Image (cartoon, rainbow over all chains, first blue to last red):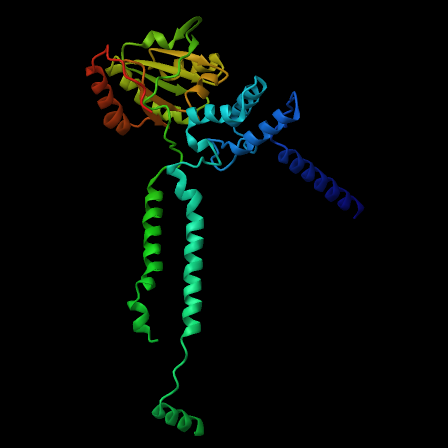
Length: 156
Length: 193
């Protein structure tokens, strides 16, 4: 009995170890920054730039080879004194506006930025109209014939 | 208010119209391939590079060398599974055409790249080594294989993402090359933005 418990415990801890190792599959990159500003810019960029290989992840979250290359590129550009806008420009020139998780406010993206507010306004307008209409409509008094029928039905 | 009077109001039909509009948009969305991101580089001058040649790393190839005639850049790697699919198609194309094809051996140890060409055949006029993938970034490469077609003045005219198929070769690349080779060679095109 004791042996069985021992074996189960060992098996359990080995499983835990394997899970723990796999969850740290992504290598932790250690980068040094000259000051907090550059560090903040770097964090902002890798969170706002999209990984093109795994399209629903940003550079910060992606484990793809290209994402790691683009993180290096971002880091090197910032270290060499480039601004956030310049790094974004560099990426957009190569990969298109698709790399930006936060698309710029341009005629092509107006519908994305304004659309939800237009829909919300439209919905509010409809809601107000419906509630007003239902408040205004008074229920007409039943006709004499209807009242007679109701009374007859209730009496039965 | 009876049911009839509601249906007469135009607003009654708005949700239905919105629903069908959404259906049309979603139906269009289903036919698109989200992996194909339009390249902003089309219509612009091809990014210049100078890289060692795979078969003879002592020598460098510069994009300037290919100026004056249309050329193709094909991004490939020995670790790329889809490249195996397109490789026989490229081999056959190279046999029947004398187009200048540069292979960009992307993020691949040169020995692996050379072994791959020895095994599967070499359709390229020459291949260059982009071991760190830096030139790949300049060309906006995000999924190997990728294929670019440049005109005689070095402007990127076409990009194909993913393996080339016989259909894409016959319907797009070959007609484009025919059109490009008939264009006057001295003509310098301004990059289109």
